Image (cartoon, rainbow, N blue to C red; front, side, top):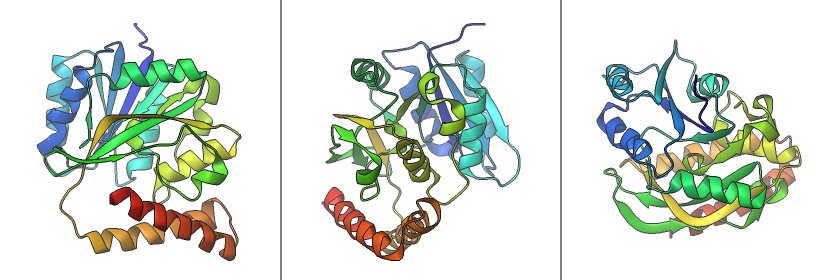
Length: 251
């Protein structure tokens, strides 16, 4: 069986309305030697049926089912476990990749001889139309600096599983599991390299901004205290830096 170099893991929860557009952005990549692993995550809409339909039309798509209410981390871990490629990329079911996303990210990873890379991205509206607000990323990010900025966006990431190993990459079942995962990898001594080029559109639904902020604050505090095991004073300092950068990123 062909083992494509790049495996893409996509958890899917109630994404029927946007899934076809997102999958289309994968299948139209200029780098096409890939597998797309979609993991159905307890949807109550027609997501699973659409996933199976899309898989029947393209052999590069694989469909898994995350039975029960386990959440996105468990779904992603199922995908990671099933991945056959050396390189792992993530894509959320409502985001959009630009045509050269994989080609440029993989080329950048190899050029840097890196095991962890990420790119810039643009905020989009509920229709994934770009708003012009592009998040720039640093050239390199280590663990200490990552604690004060959640600048690594899941749909931009690529990891080298041969260098990192799947055990290190598996996501913990905690709030903001993606950020917790990046910290875990970086804490091992790995640096993440940023490609400062917009290659992803982050679709944002029209939800209450104030409630989202409150949830984000609670989650980041939990990560500081329970995952990074920081003291209260250090957590406050890091949270201040995180808050300032979060605001600037949205201006």
